[in-house]
Structures are given as C-alpha cells and as structure tokens.
Amino acid sequence: MMPSPKRLVILGATGSIGLNCLRCVTENPDLFRIVGLSTHHQVDLLLQQCATHKPQYAAVSGRMVSPVELLQFEQMKISLFTGAQALTDLVNAAEGDMLVNAVVGAAGFLPTLAAIELGRDIALANKETLVIGGELVMNLAAKKGIHILPIDSEHSAVFQCLMGEDPQSIEAIILTASGGPFRSLPKSEFKNVTVERALAHPNWRMGKKITIDSATMMNKGFEVIEACRLFGVRADQVRVIIHPQSIIHSMVEFKEGSIKAQMGVPDMRIPIQLALTWPRRVAADFPRLDFNVLKELTFELPDMAKFRCLVLAYQALAEGGTAPAVLNAANEIAVQRFLSRSIRFDQIETLVQAALETHKNRQHPQAEELVEADLWARSFAENFSPHSTGILT
Image (cartoon, rainbow, N blue to C red; front, side):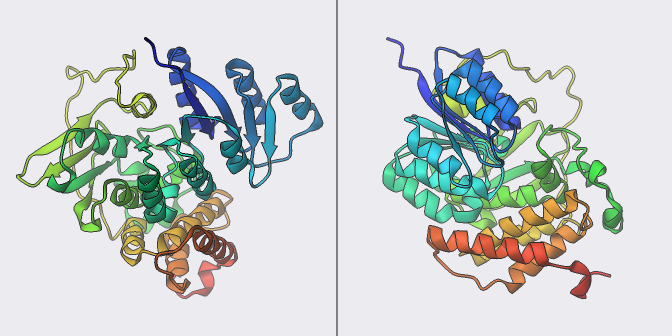
C-alpha cells in the first residue's frame, strides 16, 4: 500500500532552494502535496507556483500585496498571510507533515520554533535557525520527538556519513569549503573587491546573501555552528578544509582513524530530495559523478588570517549565549550594506567584530532574548561607521 503524500509547507519557495525543492516535488508527484508556499517579495512567481501546486495557504513577508494580486489569490481560494508575522502565521495555519525552511536569515528562526511546537519534521536550509538559537531549537526538537533534516550539502553529507554509526564514535567532522571566489586573492586586495566580483561564485548558483557569505567564509562559520548543534559535537571537533572542486561535500573521521566521505556533483536537488524522502532514497535522474572526467581532488587549510569571519564564528560559538545571534544579525546588515555599496567588502568583518565586542552576552537565552539580541545587533550594524573606530584606515 502506497503511503499518503507527504504534506509540505515551503518557506522561501521562490528562492534557489525553494525552486529546486519544487522541482523535486514535480518529479515525484505521488510522494508530496504542497499545502503552503511563501515568498519575501516575488509575488508574480509565487502566484505561478500556486497555480501549479494549488496550496491552501500562501504568505508574502517582504512587501505589500496589491489589490490585483490579492484577487488572484482569492480566485484560487488560497488564504494569504502578509507582514512581519506572515511566515509563522502560515506555519500555524497549514496542516503539513514537514516544514521546508528555505528562507534566508533570521526570518526563519521563529517559524522553525512554531513548526517544532506543532510536532512537524523540519527540512532545514535556513542555517541561521541553528546559529541564532541552536541549543534551544535542538532541545525542543528532542522534547517533541521530531527530526531536523539538513538540506545544506555539507550537513547532508555528514548526516549520510553518520547513518548507522554511533555518534560517540565521532573523532571529527570535516566540513569542506570551495574557498569561494577569493581563495587565492591576497588580503590586501579585499578593500578593492566589487559587488559584482563577490557575487561570482566559482561552483554554486545561490542567492546574493549566501554568495557574499561564501566569499567572506562567514557561511562556513555558520556551518561550523550548525554542525555542532545538529550533531552534538564540540567546536574543536569541527574542522574546515578547502576543497575547490566541491565534489566531496563533507567527511566524518572516526575514533579508530577511518574517514567516511560523501561525494557527488554539486547539485542541490540531491540533498533536498534526501531530506524530503528520508528515511527512503528515491530514484532520480540527477547528474552522476563521472570518474572518467574527474581529474583531481585537492585540499588545503583555510587562511584564518585572511578569512576573519570564519574566526569570528568560532569565537561566537565559544562564547555561546546570545553571541551567535549577534554574529548572524550583524553579518546580515553588513552584507546588505556591502551590496548597497555603503561599506567595503573588507569592512564586513570589521562591523561584525565590533558588534560582538560591544554586545553584552546572555547565557542560555530564551527565544525572546534571542530576538532582542538580534534586534540590538541590527540597530548597531545599521548605525556603525567603520571609519570612526580606528580599526580601519
């Protein structure tokens, strides 16, 4: 007997992860049913997705909806949520089996908590959820008996390497990183990096924010924090290694010295489909790794003096409490300011460091305290002038 289709709520349906998620759904129509979709501001695309997948609910979190657009949702008999609480309202209203959280930034934190409270499994691409409040989120997930399944290629790789293994046997988690577009660029040139150059990632096609985070390696720092929360390991058990080909997505080293690596072409549909179908693996026609073409796999240590954002992430993780939430929020604003050309690329790390040094940390915070720390860091970052600190010349 075929199981009933899994009911999905997809936050961030119009972004890169959301689009690939819907591709997986389209290719497996008997396995899934869409009950809720959201976008930040791409309402035209969301309307197209709603016409195709016919969800009961939708949300627009980042802009006003025009009367004409609202009428289109009404004609499709879709209940629409808008405004700052739209994502959480959507999660609470839609009777789904799984939340796919593919939004960017801190906006994904409270909807994740809401879904866990409702007892729904999470397919998580929003790494900020675990950066901001990983201890709180994982404790609540354990209490509710729900699964948090990683979509990020690196954490999906670790998840797969640990299938059937005793977590106590982990010696180290080795997260691979492409090194981004500036792996070989001297630090002295960071002040001259343009927005266009920073957005030109060599291996992955992603949204602007995560692409900039990859260029500064803050994204990898977030992934270190996420790995500690997801897999219950210490910070000194998570290592980062540069692997420019992005073929090995991450590795796990065990106590006797053996290492498992998960490999594949850089195609986000692979980890997305695994998260959606777990504990099954469902056949797909995704591209295969061709060992006749693959010429080399190379590795090098990250330059911690050059990529200070990675160092700051380890520092925030060591401090714990509200420090990771401040790290994330200050970085979000710093990236926005770089994209709008109000600060230089090399000033992203300066802004984030200043926020961490100024913030008064609180240990074992509840959700309200994490939101408060997030708001404080955003205000600090928006008003920060790197030229007045004496840090930069």
